[in-house]
Length: 500
Image 1 (cartoon, rainbow, N blue to C red):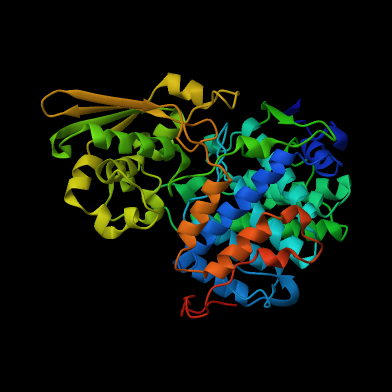
Image 2 (cartoon, rainbow, N blue to C red; image 1 turned 90 degrees about the vertical axis):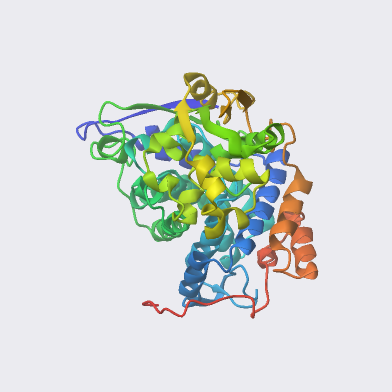
């Protein structure tokens, strides 16, 4: 790996494009590196993971709306949409739009946390859609996805967006563009321009994840993927982009991030070096913000230690800066304590999540978020007794550069009414790659079968699982086989009409 130093240059200094971050990303996207065998297997895991959560969310309102929009853009030789017959095709950017929304809706797919946040699995829907429309092979798709993960993970390591209240999809636009460029074997110049265009159009604020969180949280990465596809299309036709997008005097860094004196270090593999960043990412066992995963495990274990939950006086959670300020009481969002809050808000409230997991000794992607569940009096009592605190020790662990030492855990102290204190702590979720029971292929398959049960037929389930595990051998034009169909009667529609 090479650490690339990135800073802002005044316009009077013409920065050679080969010294620009976008070019360096484009170089590794256009190289001919050998595909790492472990990365290949992890891509297959993540395609299974994405399909699991996408099928489970097909009849949720944001997904229905996105699907209705996409259905207005049919294309004879286009891409498939989850749930709909594979014989019916749609414009790739619109297929990416609705499939991306379906993947993101339940907040239940993979994650990578470092200087910023990310869900690298968001790269898969736009790449798969383009691959289907252009009749690429399984190997082509693998190359593109591995590149996209590499780019997003390393941008997340080097550039913090949330400090400036910029949504993390600003790293997704460039990674999708780079991944598509790699998959299509575009030249370095074309990918360079696409990365810059994609970044330029995918910068938005973090209000989408603040206060009363709306369905836009599910749409945001799908929108970034759609915009990145369009950016690649434009540059393939010979159009250019704002440049240098990272280092320029009025660039993203200069005007929106750390400013003209900013200095960033972005790690990237050498040209032709195997790309392995996907192996540093991790999926979710539970449908909640990733920083809640270990805390759900802690809550389930504490349930067995506490004989009477009614005797709890208060609960203190000592954790990292990110957990405290994003999903904890440090966010100062009253909505995170509100039983009437949206599902999107509740899955970003560690106080709510911990209270439910403590009571139920379990977590369910639907039952744990119902209005009735959120309004249970005993839950509200525990929920409102919880406070989070930043502990510098946990913050240091969160940012440890060594993946084996990086921690997303916490220490919990439960104080009972009689003054007794019961505590537990966990470095990382049990299902984390370095947890007590890391997710393996069988766990991904189990998650798929659990989430798609009674939605798809056993035949459809076996067909998909058999196909995806042979991804490397799929020939050009065979990627439509990765689609999953459901009964027409199952899919709900939104009766409200829009423009399309």
